Image 1: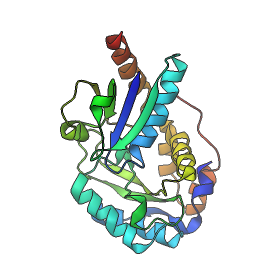
Image 2: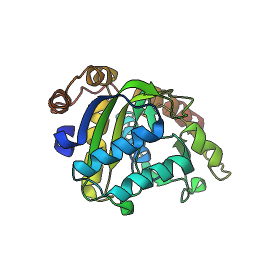
Image 3: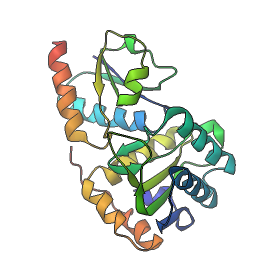
Length: 91
Length: 152
């Protein structure tokens, strides 16, 4: 599956979220590619799942991808729950 | 270890600031004195705050203002600023912040190591509380010489 993390500048928050998502998916034994992007260049339709904050979720182009809203970037337990729930939807 | 990405000139504790703009300006000034960015980068962080809002409040209490690499980043690194009073940056989900991590990232490979080091240093919530209890810059720096255990 393909996962995209999105933030404002594409160099801080989304990169951190990408690292957490990769680690979670790796732990779960899921074969996934995780990319990160800034909001102005994000192409959510190229992905199955998009992870972003409430604010950028509103700014995302319309998409068929599942959008996970995750505001506390450091909360890996919460991200894991949301990501695994999204995975179950994909199957 | 996050300590390798900062230095004593880039750390300030318990600053008595009253507005988010002051905090971003101070975090930027610390990046300049630490040798990580030019003064223009501070302006770029303020501009990004105006344009994109406070998404850089990455967790309750923790703000990580930053701008694009081409706006004056010299070397990958961070400044660390703790505030006497938490300030409301306008992030409803994560609330006010009193730990400000000024981020200067180049976009090169070392940048990834820097973000990894920040994630490792703060992924345990008690690390934030520990850092907020520091009363000197030296205490902050020595705290960052060890990684927090993973709580994933």
